[in-house]
Length: 206
Image 1 (cartoon, one colour):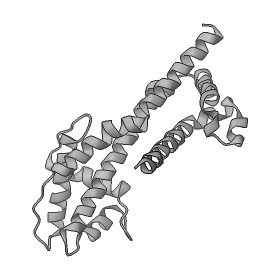
Image 2 (tube, rainbow, N blue to C red):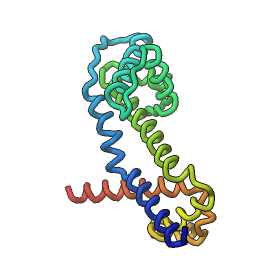
Image 3 (cartoon, rainbow, N blue to C red):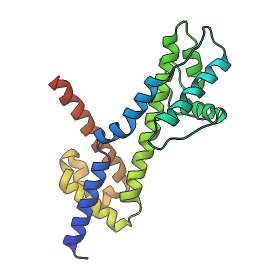
Image 4 (cartoon, rainbow, N blue to C red):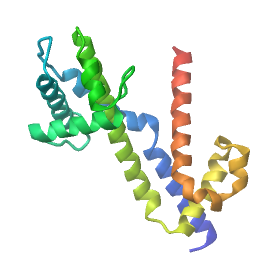
């Protein structure tokens, strides 16, 4: 394969990767179905509620979300759904002054259903975060991770040519060889900046 053919292949790979990680595409594939499933969920809880009531609620919510809101639906038993809900809260939940499952239990034990709705909102956001992370890892595995070091260096070189303006002068001067090990972080930051810019433009337009 000639150098020009290698460059073309690397450029196509970068274009494919950037297309897969387009924020609007990710939002439509992951966020929108999760948001729709969350709106469909109905629960009936009488206040005050017990610890077991809380567990039944978060388990039912996660079971519903995994069956109705994921790209690859999963059917969970009640025990599996509760285990998954607790795991998500432990990993992602951040309330006003608390975090993790215990924090969610404490925050949800308020005097109104709005406190429980806040916990469920955070759970939905946690599912989004987990699904987005899996999607990004799949995209990198498909395009980048299975390549040898030489190919990944070529990908970094093409990225610098096409998108170097997104980087600081210090990073641009490092060259592709120095960027290979941090290539995924570079792409993630690039996509995040693009998403933020689109949000700003849409906000200005409105």
